[in-house]
Length: 213
Image (cartoon, rainbow, N blue to C red; front, side, top):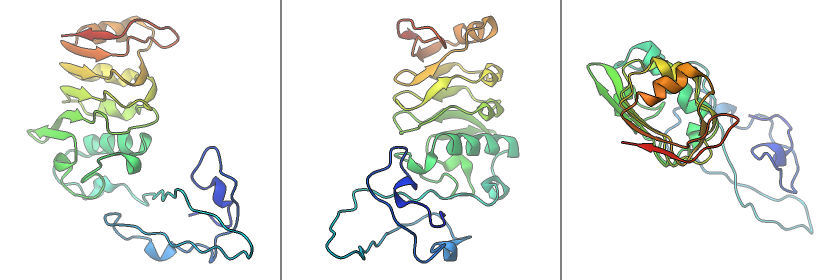
């Protein structure tokens, strides 16, 4: 947690007109090591006289002291690490549905994850408020056949080159800000996917939306 940081800068890229100090320092230290599941509540008191205001929004951004994958029992460590990297890179704490993620020791039961034979074969996170960039670690899901990231408008940037190692038969990323790297090998891999729904955008260039089935 922040120590004497401006309240305004704690969670927003564009801070509101609010500043102050955290009192006491490190008030959430007592929660170190506790499970993230549950309902968190914030109580705020305005100590300044002749001043009124209203708290519009607050956020709590937890961090992991160690990898959650040490406790996952149904997937290889590399595949679990890929899922964990995806969660962290795309602000999983704010997903619309993050049921089970970094909470259950059965990764194959996490929302959107489908497994077969002890490996992740499908990842369906359409319209789930993913934001940021797709991490290169996704390439560690070496048995992945279906990847649906469509409808996550805040997911942007280039598709990682590591995706070319995946045997995808369906890849949907329409309705995102993702773009395909502009080099031959990636384009050949993308063209070989039977069920493809993309943005039609090559990094640095813009084309019509791409849909093939």
